[in-house]
Length: 429
Image (cartoon, rainbow, N blue to C red):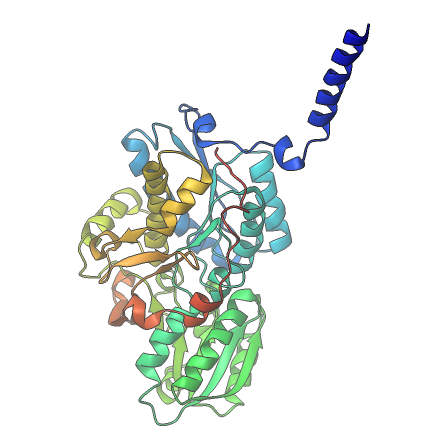
C-alpha cells in the first residue's frame, strides 16, 4: 500500500511540475532541423505596400522587382528545394490597420517572410509586429531615417538609401559653395517627412546654412497654390523638400521655371514611377539610387530582362524602386540558401554580414548591410530631370554620385539600438 502511495505521489509531482513549468519551457522554439526539412512546403512571402493612393505606382514597381527575384529562384528549383509563393496584401496607408494586417498574415496565413512597405509609417507598424513573432521583415523602399534608427528591429532590414543619405549628398553637392544659404524646409506631415527634415537640419548647419522656416503640408494636401504662396512668403535662397509619391507631381505641376531659376530647390528623393508617369513636369535636383541608363556592369542586362517581361506596360522601363526591390529579395533568398535553413536566427546572421560587389549592385561602388542598423550602405546619385525629353525614359540624367562613406548617417550608426538576437523569438517557417 505504501509503495502504491509513493508511486502515485511521484506521478502527481511530475504532472504538477509539467503543468506549472516556466513559460519559456512550455513553448519550445522551433529549431532549424525541425522545420528546414519540411522541404516540400512552399516558402510564402507576403508583399505589403499600399496599393492605392499616392504610392500605387511605386507599389506596382516594387512588386515587379520582388517577382523578378522570386522567378529567378523558382526557375532553378526554388530556395532550399522549396517553391517560393508570393501573396499580396494591401496594408493601406494607416499604421494601425497595417499592424492588424501584419498580425493576420503571421497568425492566420502562416507566412514565411514579409517584404515591401513603401510608406515608412506602415513599415514601422508592420515591422514592430514582425519583431514580436520573429518574422523577418525586408523593407525594400521606405526611406525614412527612422526606419534604420528609432524604429529599427533585429528582424528588420532596410534596403533603400534614406533621407539623411540623400540630404547629405545633395547638400554637399549644391549648398557648400553657395554664397546665400537661407534655407526653407518643405515637409510632408508624417513620419517620413519629419524624419527627413530632422536629418537635414544639422547638415544644413554644417554647410554654413540657416533654416529660416518650415512649411508643413498634409499627406493629402488639396491646394497647391496655397502651399506655393506659403513658400513665397518666407525669404529663402534654398528650399529643401521632403515630399513623396504623386504629391511631387501635384506640387511641381504648378511650379514655374522662373521659381526654380531664382531659387535653388533640392528634392530629397524622386522615385522613377513619379517621374516617368509625369514626364512633362519640372523637377529640381534630386537624389536616387539607380537609373536604367547608368553605364554600370549588369545594368543593360537587367533592363533587357525587365523590358522583355514588362515592355508593353505603362511602366516599360525599370527604375530605382524595381531595382531596390529586386536586390532586397535576392539578398533574402540568397541568405536563406547560405544559412541552409529558414530559421530566422541563422538568416539574420547571414544578412548582417551581407556584402555586394559594385557589379552585383549595378552601381559604381560596393555595398553592404551595416550590422548595427541593418541598413544598406550604398552609393547615392544626384540627378536632373528634363521635362522636354521626347521619350520619358530619356528624362533622367545622372550628374553626380557620392560613395557610401560620404553619405553615411553618423547619427544612425551611433544611436540605433536593436533587440538582442537572444530576445528575438525563433521562427522557422
